[in-house]
Length: 250
Image 1: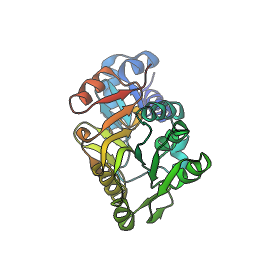
Image 2: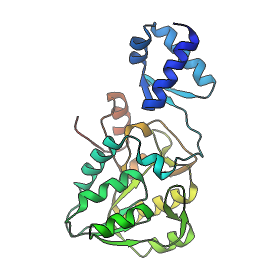
Image 3: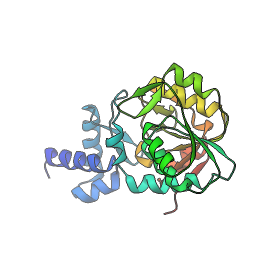
Image 4: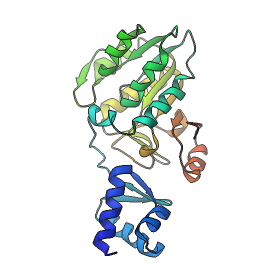
């Protein structure tokens, strides 16, 4: 297989999966380990991917964020499983914060029938919460069209009126050294404040977010429990040195 053909194969796989393992690339391309490692180094040099332990992930610009519509159709099966696991921590009487985001949105259906109070900054969440007859409040503030989130100074001031038993927060990046990150500083500040006002904080993020780091830091790995789908032993070992993991059963 020619260099260009291998490069195209690698990038096609990454665009579909966001992350690929070295051993899989070797098998699929019928190439040696040294050849694939050289290919990954060349592609990383072009800025289109990032090498990680045991493979590679798709490179992302730190300040670029997908729209809510784009997010909602990615890794849907993972998000539903993660949402169900996260919702299992909620008990009657809880006051919870549901951050704007596609994975936190999936949590709502698993809260039906619970005697709880929900506070959210998610515009997409509102109709679902009302239709399912859940006791809910929405923060005031600036409406962000792309992510359907309410953000800004008014939202930060508004959230100070509440205290939470649990906060469920999304993140665009989960990184061992950079912690949890997102492209938008205003969203990061609101997520951080929600964590500070909560007795327990859960980050709900599928495994495609691992090893990514974005512009604005939300908080450190130590500040929240990570709820995610099945991840590699290497990733799990590294993350568990810093925080607890709730992992969807295989």
